[in-house]
Amino acid sequence: MAAIKAILKQTKITAVAVGVVAIPNHEENARKIFEFAKELGIRVINTESTDSIDLIEKLVKEFDIRVGYHNHPQRPDNPDYKVWDPNYILELTRGRDPRIGSCADLGHWTNSGLAAADCIKILKSRIVSSHLKDIAHGSRSCARPGTGRAKLDEALRALKAVDFDGPISIEHEINWEDNVEDVKSYVTFVKELK
View 1 (cartoon, rainbow, N blue to C red):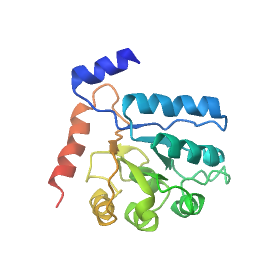
View 2: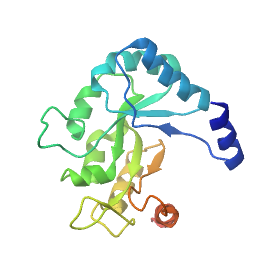
View 3: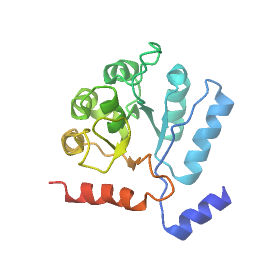
């Protein structure tokens, strides 16, 4: 923990979100994840652990940390995987603490055949964090922002329209060894969006 804090201080970076991590339905182990986040000042834990929602809600209330259910793409070979569907997340979180919601992965919704802006309009205030990535035409792989098929401009405007106030994490999941310019292009894209 000391090494992580030293790196964050040295680089003047504030950790705001963590995950996607499994939050076990075992209080002692789940509590360790929330304690880690609290110690680093992290505001959102992103997960796919739907079976732990009762325990998650208890810890969200205790630690005042948001939890976002992250959507990977739909898995036609696994009908039990439902977090890709914004309507499922809306039902899962209905009546729950408002700090529990969606980690809206805009690119993965695209890879599920959904329009990210439409998903945002369904979830509204239940979006607690977001993953920003564009998806290349004819592929499921990442692309520079604005060049792919995720319609990030529409999605970001939709986030603004629902008064989203959570962190947005850039996920450019290709060119791992040399993607700094790619990541910077996302920052520029967001800053220049009208």
